[in-house]
Amino acid sequence: MTQDAIEMIDVDKWFGDFQVLKGINLNVKPGDRVVICGPSGSGKSTVVRCINRLETHQKGVIRIGGVVQDGSAKALEAIRSEVGMVFQQFNLFPHLTVMENLLLGPMKARGLSRKDAEARAMKYLERVRIPEQAHKRPGQLSGGQQQRVAIARSLCMEPKVMLFDEPTSALDPEMISEVLDVIVELAVEGMTMVVVTHEMGFARKVADQMVFMDEGEIVETGTPEEFFTAPKSQRTQTFLKQILSH
Amino acid sequence: MRVLFSLAALLVLSGCGSSDIWGWYVVNPMTPAGWTNIKFLVNGMGATILLSLIAASISMVLGLIVALPGLSERRGIRVINRVYVEFIRAIPLLPMLFWVFYGLPIVFKSMGLNIQIDPFWGAIITLALSDSAFTAEIYRAGIQSIAKGQTEAAKTIGLSYIQTMRYVILPQAIRRILPPLANQFIYIVKMSAFASVIGMQELTRRANELVVTEYRPLEIYTLLIVEYLVLVLLISAGVRWLERKMGSDERG
Ligand SMILES: Nc1ncnc2c1ncn2[C@@H]1O[C@H](COP(=O)(O)OP(=O)(O)OP(=O)(O)O)[C@@H](O)[C@H]1O
Ligand SMILES: [Mg+2]
Image: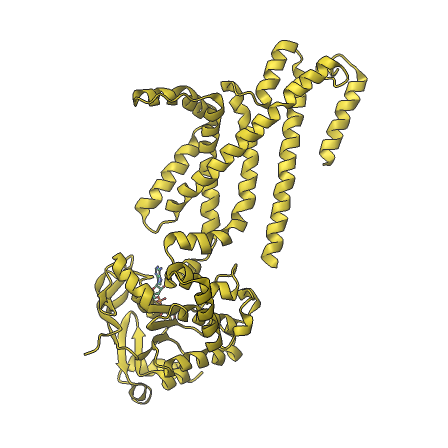
């Protein structure tokens, strides 16, 4: 039996008195591509942020590559070495060039030499198809280019799992596909990923597990086939009707 | 600049007027005695500047150390920052100066330490302490103005807290921090005048001593004010230059 990449067992989380996550169970095996969707405020971002411990959960168990996330330094180390994250707002470092954005993690956190880190950075900039932008500042790039740089920055840490939290929601429509194409390629190459998105065409293409969330619960999971053609729950049906009518 | 020139003109004119009140007898550059007095006064400039520079440097480091716990997610750690800032800010400079200069050596003595505090270091410690509450707030505001997403992105690429500050947050916050910090330096320069009361030979002390021997307070204190004015206006010009430079960097 292979080790699950991500395991969430009965995870609860509160913000003050407000319960954001209610008994979340989620298993992601190596190579899995999980797409999470659901209405605004349903807790999608919180699930993803609990996985890489940008948020802490209060109940239940989260394991990353088999390591229980208890806040210990060793557990954090497991996350930082195995899990990459791409944010809705890119969160590139605006005072650094694209190349410097990509060098920081490998050189400072991993101790790579500049030469090795630069070679790695170029490799991933080529992967996201913007090697020629290496010496620009993020502010000089389009939104789509910035998000591809952000993806390359994560890939430079050579993670086993990539988390994407609405990677295209902050983009102009004409730039969405250049970013999705890069993610699809990663999926084809076998990258394990959890993607929060409302791009249902994309979800249909890459997902092997669909997760629908509402009000802090996972309401329904299934293959895209089941999920899009025969959703079980009423809430899923309503959500799909709304989002597909756009 | 214009202010400076008109003040200089005023001085020269009133000197020419040679009325008894405004006459520049003891600080007249034309007479040997007057020139000696002027040199005696202006020589305090070095001490004032050195005092201010060292105090400001210590305050910059101390302020950062105090600011960091203020940025913690945990309330227990934030409290450290709040208590320090509120406490230090509430103490007037002069009483603090007396406490450090006359009181602190007694504390040291009771701990079996034989540490004397001379006027120079007594003034520096007091100025740095008092100023650090303000620099801490400047750092805190500057760092908080950097979006939370920057810290989160740094975390996800494995940077430690120190590395995140060093490579991601501070380089961005510095544009917001440097101009108010430089302004704060003006505060230190002005407050350094209090060092005169514990016998530090800086601008104000020298003016006081000269007044005692020459009995000409009006002209001596006028000159003293002009000395501070020149110093502060020069620093102000420097701050404005810095602000412009920072502003143009931001656009570039
Ligand atoms: N730091 C926080 N403090 C308090 N409440 C929060 C915090 N972060 C999120 N919430 C609340 O938790 C709930 C879930 O938020 P979350 O961001 O996970 O939703 P989401 O499904 O990602 O929504 P969206 O589609 O708008 O991004 C929301 O009601 C939100 O207001
Ligand atoms: Mg969200």
